[in-house]
Length: 635
Image (cartoon, rainbow, N blue to C red):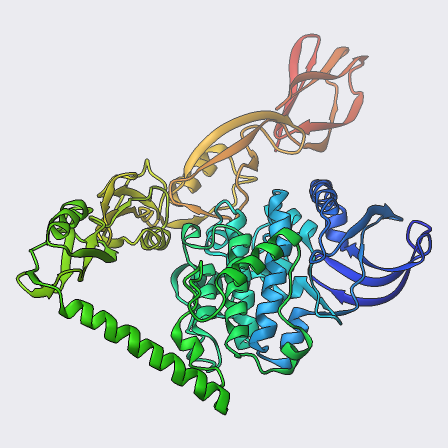
């Protein structure tokens, strides 16, 4: 029981960041889903703060295609998120169980996903982790997007920090893979990947590791849908591939625009009798989401009903109609026969009109502006039609490249002359390559329709290694598409090999011996520090800065600590007979200095005996009445 309110019933899923349970809300008497964050994130206050902030933002969203968030809190050290419980499966589970989905089902789900994401984008919320695992489908085929909060909280995590993110690499946009700023267009790309998987049963890019997959998102084009599945409308392939454009600027401008394209295609295929799957029999063409949008779409259909409808998006082509099942009953034959007869009559009348007109010579329109050409043709009772606009390196922008019929041809008055107009030179802006690796530079150039030219290796100790330090065309300059840009990569200078030696044992040696040993080993004497010691005699090495047997570069200086003494003590004893009466004094001289050991009045013939301690080497001197009567050295 969480927070004395939510009763956990059973585990229904898990991921790299959380475990999900079906639960019962005892206060409101309803089923809910509880997401418990894993322990490694519970201990991260910054993550929890970001997660809570995004969860609160998503909780304000209210849309039938977004899983509602009800509550967020902490209980007994467990951080949890309370969400709407969806009776159904994830889209990933549906694809895994059924394989490629019927086209009608793909369109239905995709339109719902567009509307759910459009609502989130209107609130400035970017999901950043759209994938089938985060899409729930209930038993009524209502699609619901989940995990907005976690997707947002993961924003600052790296690709190797979290197993959940590793699993998302198949759905990354190219800008996500490059670590760039991610905006609404990234969700459009990810939705394109999801649609591709619904159509084919597999993702477009795979690899041995997430980095390989990410590079494919940046560099490779997905395989054709038409080549993998015969019943895919070409219009649907164009929609998916527009969503999957490498550059965000070439994708749909919004989820609303993408939804409109999908609905136009769905209406067209519906009218053409394309759908024959059981799914479509149960789920008819829907009036999705907002009433205003639905009414607008109805009006468009009424105004443009029939085969002459001009679509707002260029996703409907004749090859889609080729896949429909044609009815050949008698009624259709009569209708077609009547239409053909009407067309013949119209054509006959038009031809008769043309035949009655005068012939004129078509002027040369090449390299003329459209306005100039229009004036020239108008004077000859001819019309102009711009058939296409293309880039051309030789013909100035807005000038005519070619015409049909050709110049000097004879045509009847009123004839249309079709022309192709120049868009001018196809110029692009050169990106900034400084600081990029060679591979990153190549990708950046390819994204701008430029080519990597000569790569030269240079060595500059003042510049970072293995990145671009120079480009032949400066960033921001405008050049023709396809231009080659040369770069220089700073190659890290190889460090010279240095011989290594083992540091010898120096402790216990005299300073002179230690110096000689270091020199013989190819090492140098470092700092010498002198300290008093009762363990080592004066001028002996007590310690060395680098431990013995350590491998160091030849020429390394080794610091030494040297004793100033007095060192350890030795014991001894002296004994003698006093030759005369008088005051007897015994003096000890050793490494620590001189000290009096014995002083007393003695008589001739008296025996004296004394034990003593001395440092290093010592000398005992005995005097009687000020005269030395005995002396002895001790080692």
